[in-house]
Length: 201
Image (cartoon, helix red, strand yellow):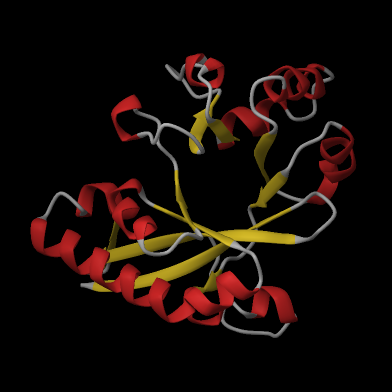
């Protein structure tokens, strides 16, 4: 089994790094396995958790010193108790803290906007496919404006910088560009501009 950990940058529309998402990729016998599926195996799930915890502990100083956050899978949410820079998306009500919760997959099939109307929602991220289909439409900035009435911080996944100006004007807090992520061991390069190994999506 091969396991690699990648840092997916999340920045403001004007290019300021706000944080990263920790993505763990698992290969078994040369075939990539969905992490959520791999986590169902107790031994694999434990190894993923232990490796993620190790990386987060080693990089904690960098995140804290630079005021950055790191999004982890909901399975690793227990790490947030000791490392306050850690964030996770809590799409199910049973997972949510009373305040400051983050919601993912806005606009996805069968997704609900009800959590937006619940006091305490801090951040909402659009579904990638939904954002791709609608980002060029005139209604998209209006939709963002309506969402921000209930949750001011909106993350929009994008493929390139073509729409950054529009998103900034609409008040979008952050964009997650579909560019090559950086290996988590070199996440510092996202701030200093150094060249380190990247991986295509």
